[in-house]
Image (cartoon, rainbow, N blue to C red; front, side, top):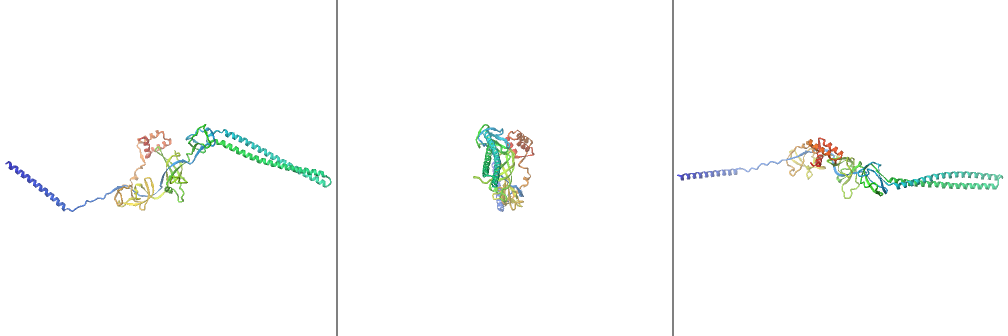
Length: 485
């Protein structure tokens, strides 16, 4: 009985297994038939769309700014030199490095003893020459009087001689009287000649006296000039530098004692390339008097000086390129000769140009613009100027187009894109300024007030900027860098 039960159980399990195998085979067979009966289908592909930043191209008139680097220098610099040899007996209290002097102020004086003695001698010789001229004038007057008297005497003797001749003709006079009168007349004429000779000598003495007087005056003026050369005075108001003498020191002729610099007559010299120089010329080929600004960064504050281009260098110079230009500065607060500054020159305005980010220009000189279906097209443009991170361009179909701001290798002609809001950047706040919290503002102001290296003028300007609602980001960055934060 037990054997029969186990046999039936085994037979049932075997039947169940065979049934499952048949069912599985049927499923596989149906799947294969269905797969073979289906037609092949290709998966649907979707076009990839890139998001890009775009900007509207608008024509405008822009004044390009040319950037260069130059050095501040003074238009009036005077080397202070000693004109004579000797000992410095006088030295001004402010004759020192950085001393401020006024025009005509006595800076130093060489020992004037020898020059004073020479002046006294020249003065004595001049007095003698004047006295000699006066005596010669009196002698001339006497000679003229004596000549007049001799001429009168000769006239009288001639009349007496004629009277004796008349008496002899009438038989009253004698020949001896006639001869005596004739001899007296001859002697009178001889006396006139002698007086004339004396007058000539007196006149020559006048000439010699005048020559001697002129020579004495020249010697006196020279002695006076040498005495004046012992005094060293300031030719104009300015600041002293390179001072290298002390009171009591021995100086030689033409030895440099220092340099006088006029801090109010400043200019900046800078070099530009030849193409940049060509843009600063007018139609006649003359250099434009273009406005210039010089920027000097100190203690987180940008000092700016205004000026205008005044002249250009006469030659390029050995080992140099481009052109050397000079700009006269009218307002240069806190700037000194020797400062290196950033120079910005305003070029003539450009009309009908479009300002775009420099990242929008491709290596082939084209930009990518969007058509009506938001697909990219290449558009050739002409770069007129580069202004920092921007470019000024012109193109035939550029005005009004939507230009891609940033070029990537994934973008090309015909690709469909999704433009982002082109006006988002325009509505954003100025990235060059920051809005400070009260604690941060107070901390910066306390640092400026406690800093002993800053001048009072610089502190006032910094505090004025920190009190504004929005503070320049560069000022904040530099102050916090100095604070160590």
